[in-house]
Amino acid sequence: MNFHFFFFRVLLLCFLTNFVGATPDGRSPIPFQVFLWPGAPNPNLDAKLREGVKEKGSRSMLEYVPPTIEFSPNGGDEVELVQAAEQRLSPTYWYEGSNPLVFFRQESVGTGSVRRVFLGDVSIPPSFRHALLLFLPDPESRNTYRIYPIDNSRERVKPGEACVLNITGTTIGCLFNQEQILLEPGEQKVVPIGASESVYIVVRIGAENNKGDWKERYAEQLYVNPSDSLTILVYNKAGRPNNFRIMQIKNPGSGPVSKEKGLSHGAKPE
Image (cartoon, rainbow, N blue to C red; front, side, top):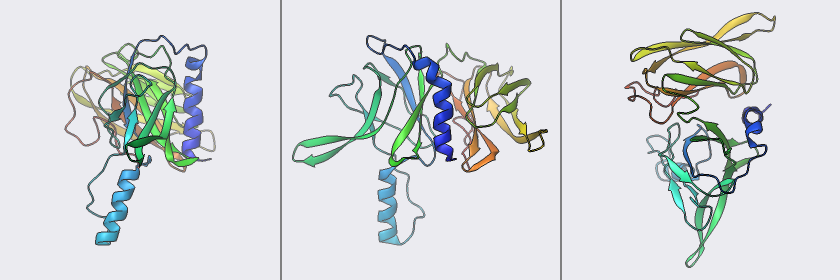
């Protein structure tokens, strides 16, 4: 099964109960940040790559160009550009319109005229106080995103805590520092970080093999601070359901950024 399609099904199951009975009109403005998953559509970078190959005959040494992602803060004519880059959290934006929140890019269609090219939309549950929006490739369209909301507010995940979310299709065991948890596909649990100072902790992922025996499948060191509020995504390498990886994302207001590559906003997926 296509990895990203299954990713959609798991996260939809995880958040569907939040959508039922939601009344989008009259809600309070919601702050959100965007996280671009590796491999998500980026026409700007594609164009630069084509230009580089045409001019230099090589794809190497090309500067990264972020995609153009825009939205209307009030759901109307006003337009704001999202400063999003792959594998990094965007700045915080505010949305005060009705669900769904629609993302687009504007392009010129004539003298003084522009049109909005649809990129994706998402319904944010009214219970959210701060939303982390994951932008993933849409397996049905190479030009749009599938967008998934995660409540990463301080009310949901307090300082000194981590929300571990299983976005694989496998039941997993997770040893997060000294906390042992079992997570079904799509399930999430909040656990204490268990650090009294800035340290490296070990996160271990286990799953059953074909014989029904539990085996450790992956382990990774994460640099954490006692005041951190973290979102930890456990996912599979694309097309390899038995290979697990971890994405670490610091929620708003967490401690100082680590000097180590990738540890402040997540290790680079392979």
